[in-house]
Image (cartoon, rainbow, N blue to C red):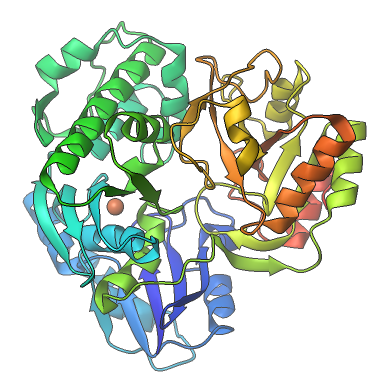
Length: 489
Ligand SMILES: [Fe+2]
């Protein structure tokens, strides 16, 4: 049975093709339209998905009627024409070359939770989903067992949303809400959490196992604390988010029967909070789907409506650039130039470049961070991530968890002075660990790089220019090469 899972009409649309328990294909629309966070399904994405099979069934990642009802209650209903984007009507308007099957809907938070549980190896788990908003729910804790059915332990609803509050701070700090939250997380390390008490007084009250808000964050926070420094605001909001998430995880461990934790929803992209949860909540194991935000819910929607588990072989599920992983030319270019790009294999499903659409660099030179930031045209304070073979990670980082294959946790770097370009100002790094089986090419590259130079780490960042989606095709990769002078293999 071929399912198409779809997440669209909100932001960062994606499509997944799933045949029984195998994810054949999954990709983001933005990689095809080249328009960041594109909310609509691009025809190139649809064309490629069709190579893996036309759908016998379609699963949609949330319930549009409930969402409209929330818009109505929140005063965000524009006019009756906003019904035009209802999924079935929208899909029919695309002129697809097959008969569109009836669309099956999953709850927004069930899609998040199912994406995590279905792809995990756990027999049972407690799942915490925290995001901005889907229909009404904004925060949920559920227990999953062998049946695949979730049992809800706690839920929080609109307007009490941690994700929306973080987005309000994103705007307050001068960035784009619903897009630049990761910049605020990076900025938090530059400031001090001096406004935490004021946040608790005026904006958010901790109410175990979650929280209540004292304002409606959808309306933003205006120029709250007008004289405060953005980096202190970022640091304070980050600290509050960590308090909420660690508190919820501790509660979940004490009140649910499972020793396994799964995190989902956009807040699970916050790798500083994830590390605190790993250190403090006391779970035996943690799984975070590498695309835990709404884009990953194309996979989650299928798992939610079928209730079945999925075989997880890794996040390399998108467009393919064929050929062997180019280890020798990459090492040679890294040795002579210090920076190189790789566009090889299937594109990553999720926000991080994990070795198939990556810009790689020698993490040792003092000026490497500035050089890579210049190539990418991004804010100078932004840190870069290291990639290391899994069994070597603990030599260089105080890992909060055994493996971090999808860059989901920060860890204190033991030698920030030796690797200045991959350590953030607070001394932490967002580590990617690689096992030979999960990515033989990248693992082999790290081995060959160490053999040639004695250095076990590489800097790994996404292959894109400022404000662009990740490079998808070989043609885009060569355009990047022509524009920046960085060679692509
Ligand atoms: Fe969500």
